[in-house]
Length: 403
Ligand code: ADP
Ligand code: ASP
Ligand code: MG
Image 1 (cartoon, helix red, strand yellow):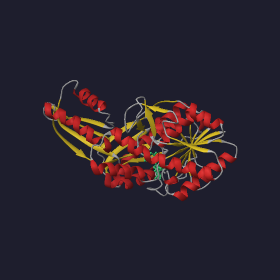
Image 2 (tube, protein in one colour):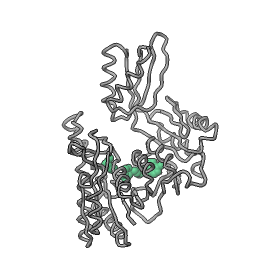
Image 3 (cartoon, protein in one colour):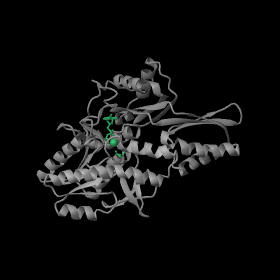
């Protein structure tokens, strides 16, 4: 078999853990498999590098950030290759560039355009274990790029797809995908299987156990994806097609996203085309807009509220400021002390009253709901950040996920 194994930050958090990973990879290789390993930076390393940059500038060039951040993964990749070689294996580490990962030029959140697996294939043919530095690629104009936070998951899935691997294992610090973050609700239950679509919703709505784009790609390329822990032999969770899952529960999980901020625009000129202008400008600035609410005010204006990731706030403000200059928007305000809690389940499609139950859970804890959005398979609510964990536990219990 050809197996891609990805090890996240905690799994390579110190030298002893890197040795533990080397032992694990060695075992897989000795069982007769071809192995491509993808590694993250040691835990805390990427944040540390970001704080270094912020020491000098609040708006560092994105291209320089990629040069900086991509270094974290190179450290782990080379250390792991050194450890494997010492154990008698023939291991070689590769940067994203060497592994053939070509991206667009959208620095700090680049998209993979294609993977040229020639170099990796040749190394595998020679019996080598390949250790790829995750989270990075190279743009067509030759600059190093990174794939967004948590992007090593995407590297692993994309490589598994390009090499047509039999399996892609994501090793992390929890034993699989749970009904909610087990660090928030210890009663959370591990799922044996989950569909790509539900996992994609959970990941997009804040469950950082898998990066959302990695799940999207796994679905598209039909990659067999398993999430499991690097600290024991415990079986993990299979992420697979919906038809492979026999019994579909009504709700499969609760997600929490604390990385959201709310932007309120007051006194927006009420004329056709204004929303299109504002949101097109935001899109051009790569601001990722999520929930949107528009209310008519008493005069000839409207109020528009929407949420964006905290990291996009700076760019969003610049766009809003330009509309304030022209008089199209009278006033704005920003709130970073919010969070988004979401209920996800494909079983919701055919049931009524699922949303009402979520609102009851909030009511019973006296939590005010600021914004609501629903789709066929999810309900999301924006609430004050201070109630985040309470809201998650309350939702988890009202849908009996701890049973
Ligand atoms: P890694 O560094 O290995 O990539 P991450 O920190 O990115 O690991 O993701 C693992 C974390 O995801 C877990 O420690 C857990 O707190 C969090 N998490 C959030 N939601 C879930 C969930 N539904 N199931 C499992 N883990 C979750
Ligand atoms: N080190 C990067 C991050 O922290 C990528 C990853 O861990 O997947 O976002
Ligand atoms: Mg991660």
